[in-house]
Image (cartoon, rainbow, N blue to C red; front, side, top):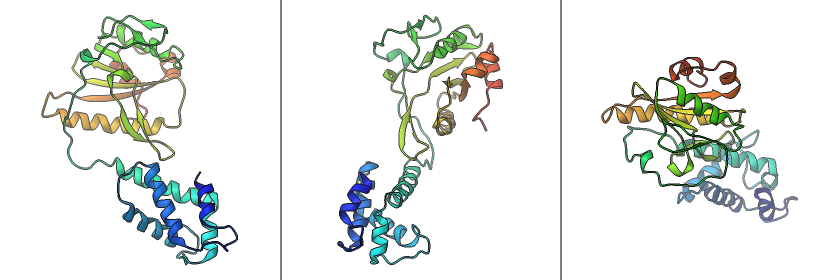
Length: 264
């Protein structure tokens, strides 16, 4: 663990090896390992050193040769603050998109290889390329209810539950700063040619705002990339179970009009 290893580097009473270089090197190596970065140790070492000296402590700048400073660096809360600060900053830079978007590859649902799921309730839908729409076990039946809505909506031309076997997922920064992957719930094509990515939730999760921000940006990028190709417009909707059951829509158009959370 982070705090356990740093205690081996610096003794708590300040009488141990008072070498700030080993402390800075430890944090730099841990960050590289945790964030799965390849190279950049020299740059990261310098940034960590500057952060400790000029920003980490009140009354900065501090003397890195001071045994008290080294002792304080061995405290778990100080180490966590430094580690989390760099992790969030690096992850934000890692997924920063600057420049144009383009289509590199496509996922065709009809080319998805057959796959098996656990024995769970399912819906047979005529508008889906898959012979069965199987809900997730922790959705409480909401996904199947939503699939039935899509099957009956007059402005839905085709839809599919997004299964892991399809290979569609988005990377995003979690609330705690970690990078993760996220797979939305449904993809829908309406009769006007618009493609919708829909996230359904029966309960609120801490990372929902981060996921929706990423999905929103993805739809913007996908629409821009398709502008010179097939011209498809991509949109997204977040649907919470309570509101859906209280005010059930009849069409995707009504759904989009009534469920606007995370749109702005």
